[in-house]
Length: 111
Figure 1 (cartoon, rainbow, N blue to C red):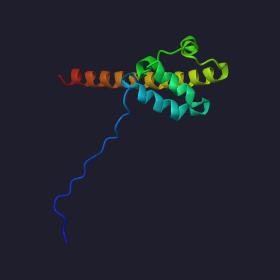
Figure 2: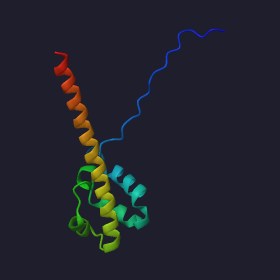
Figure 3: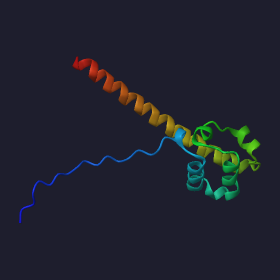
Figure 4: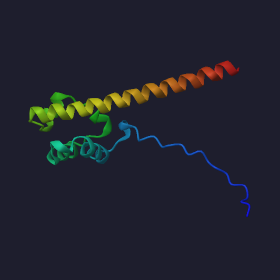
């Protein structure tokens, strides 16, 4: 039995949603994945203060204190996770810029 014209599509892996597009629910999901050992009451603070992805990346030690994260050790550990997420975001943006630049240069070279 011969199969007729099977085509194989190259599947592209979907990129995760950009952090600056995250909702508060996305931030809580991120918190539970990366910081759950510090307690769920902190996750509730992210909801209470309506922390979106854009605002998550702007948080610092003072803003976490004002939100109610009073334990210095927990606050420092959570801030470290936030900084790691900020770094990942920066790296992805740099890669996007490099890709756009190479596409632009290829277009210029083709003309």
